[in-house]
Image (tube, rainbow, N blue to C red; front, side):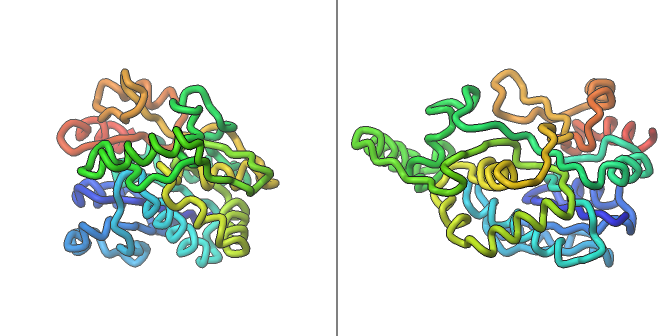
Length: 281
């Protein structure tokens, strides 16, 4: 069975090359590289099974990240021989030996691994996460930019005036979840068909904060696709529960015990010995 790796990346081309080199010709690899990093594309392996794209300039939490993901899905789905699809970052790394990963996905080729839960969700902060889609966000990542003040003021004004954006799809039933997943060809086709038939659905997520954590989980959870509520990723979210911690050698046993397909996140230097251990299983 041939599989697709869909990768969104923006930094450390050497780490990205190491990730790519862990996979053989049974995998077709589709990479969206942040447009701001266009000059770095030449540093990435140009093997025949690697497809590089750089259409969008991506900021954390921004709508362009969602569009880049959907573009990768469409590019990969156009290859009729690909039967299983993994969305990962350039900082992810496979946990299983390649032969074991192939065997697992062959056995579970109809299964769909996606973290998902109905919104509101108590762990998603203000309004259970509904604030992300109810209000207009000029800059979803405003806490990291000079647009922070204006975005805070706009959001505060919308709340005071009770100006809430309507969400009319799927009876208003929203789901949140993790950005990254492993899905069957049927699931990818279902999502792309819906987006093609309802282009306004995708546009509804403009000016939504971290739209990729709502758009596809909502679509799939409201479809006839059978979902397993597990993204099959090992992530240490740290004490604040918001930022993935860089993994190191000390995390090896926990990673292996997790049964995950991929671990996030790796950084050269800190994670080198861990990646060597995963390579040499």
